[in-house]
Every structure is written in structure tokens, then in C-alpha cells.
Image 1 (cartoon, rainbow, N blue to C red):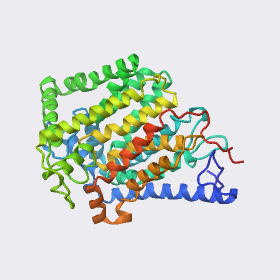
Image 2: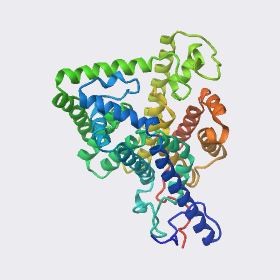
Image 3: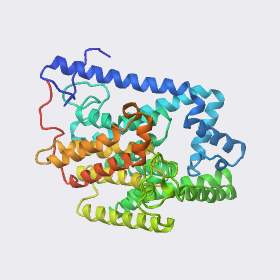
Image 4: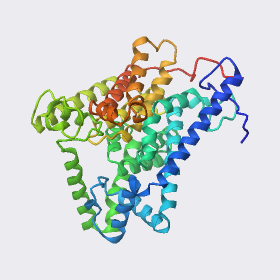
Length: 439
């Protein structure tokens, strides 16, 4: 790899001097790679204080015939037993090696999410690589990739810091629709089914496939969901244990969802409603601002009504679009649906909002097209970025971070971004940027 960087198509930041642009690109690459390496090394030094430890504990109980749902940390569906079991076996060889491989996979999944998000809106621009090859193709240093990554880097940083699984799940979802666009329906259905089996929220994409009348994609996804969640557990654990695991998981998930006092780190819409409309909703938060003290069932009905109204509005907004997965307008739909899924997830922690890389990529792509930008749209875009990035503890401190999250700052930023994305959903252009590539 040469230290003399070849500028990619549409580099960011771009200066009048090519030398200055190249220096900025090298600095960005160096900082990102240094950050990723530092977070991986830091996690290795605190193995018993990261979520990965919980994955291994779940796997140990699976391998020894115990009940994984005896662990308070375990809210994952039963299919996660297989993932946890593999991790536990690897940890028995070397706990450090297992965590290292997991973290390397996490970083690679983040790069995969950045790349696939960009490909959704720049499929005609040729292959996208991490290290730039020439001025004709996009790379990580291109505006369409680096800017959305930097604007969501706070979320990815906390994701890697805590060894989460959400970036891997998002990668599988984006890969599924990329495969659908290439006509590889079976592989796409498997990828989407694995994602929805690992974390339950992506199963909301099944109704989206139904709405788009994507029968082949829907059929293969549902078929693999049945295999992964019914046939495979029954075959490996036996029908009785598999069924018992499903009943226990439903009880655990239902209990978490019904929690009347969500922690301020829960940035979901249901949690925000509890803070706003019940006195108990902010008991564990540093800030209390409830406007009412409604019963829990009333708040639940408000959530259901708002969610249904939003779903119907989106369905109406998307009604004229095809199911061509390579169409930027359909890609915009997927970006909005991905963001909306996390907003309505009752357990949407900050690390779950890594999905915002997709609507952020779309919004940045669309706003740079002719006749799409306007002062209010740019205001929404940068306002959303400020809510998400400037609330990081490295900037405002831990106490102020807690207060801002009590005010649902991540949720507010996500909603602003999604409203902006909905207003831009019909943007389309054959070119990724209006400026010629650097020479």
C-alpha cells in the first residue's frame, strides 16, 4: 500500500490544492484506523466489562443444558443460542482470541454498512473500495461514505466500545437487499432471515416485503425464518426445550417492553412517551418533566396509534414506487423503514441507532443533488447531526449526556433525520455528485 494516496472520486474534504486534499484524506484514514484499533485493544483490556462477556455466558448455559434466560442480560431470541454457543466454544480455546475476532468482525461490519449504504445510491458508479484505487471510483474517503460515517461515528464508537451486535445485524439486512437487487433471492432471503432471527426488530421488514408484493423475496425469507426458528431449534434441542425457550423469551421480552421506568439510555419512542406522560417513566433519569400521570395502558394505546398513523403515512408516501431494489427511491424507502424500526423498538439503546448510517447516507446524497437542497432541509440535516454527535460524553461530559438523553436527544435527532428523508424520498439522479472527479 503506497503512502502516496490516490484521490478517489469526490474526495472529502476537497481543497483547491490537490496536495492539501490528499493530506486531509491521509489524516482521515489514519485517524479512523487508529480509532478502530484503539477501541479493539481497549476492549481486550476490559473483557469482563463488555457485552461480549454476556454472549459467552449465554453460550456456556446453552452448551451445559442450563436456561440462558436466567441471565438478566439475555433478551435475544432463541436463535441467538447458536451464535452464543459458537462464541462460547471459541472462548474455551482463548477468551482473548474470541473477543479479538468478534471486534475485528465488528469493525469489518461497520465498513460493510458504510459501503452497502453508499452502493444503494451509487450503484452505477462502479466498485467501492476502502483504499482508493483511482479518481473514477468511490472509496471510503469519498464524500458519500466518509461524511455519513463521521456524522454517525459517535454511535459506532459506542457500538465497538461495548462489543455490540447491531452493526453485524444491519450488515446482514443491507446485504439481503443488495442480493435481492442482483436477483440472488435465495441468498438474500437467508441473510434477512438470519438478521431477523438474531435480533427480532428486522422481522418488521417482512410486512414491508408484503407491501411491495415482493413474493419471491418474501417467500424465501419466511421459509428461512421457519427453518432457523422452528426446525433447527427443535432438531438440536428437542421440541420441548425449543418451545419452552420461545415461551420464556416472549415473557422476558414482554417484561422488558412493559417496564414502567425505562433507563435514560433507552432512546425509543415508547420510552419517550413514558417519560412524558407518566410520573414513573423518568424515575431512573436525572431529569423529570412528566406532563401527566396516565396509566400504562393509555400510554401504550398512544404509542400504537402514533405508530399505525406513521406506518399508514409511509405506505401512502411509498405507494407509487416499484419494487426494483436498485431504484434509489426504493433504497430511500428502505433507509426510512430501517430508521423507523428502531424508533418504535421498545428497547432502542443508543447502539441500536447505528442504522442511521443508511438514512444519513441517503439524505447527504439527495441534498447534494440539483434542486433538492433548501435552508430548512439543511437545517434539519445538521440539527439531526448535532443531536446525535454533540451529545457525546467526550463533548458535553457524562452528567450533561445523561440529561440530554433524558430529553430523548438521540430519538429527536433520528426523527428529524427521518422527516427529512421522507421529504427527499423522490430524489434521483444518475450521478453521485455534481462536480467532476479529481484528476
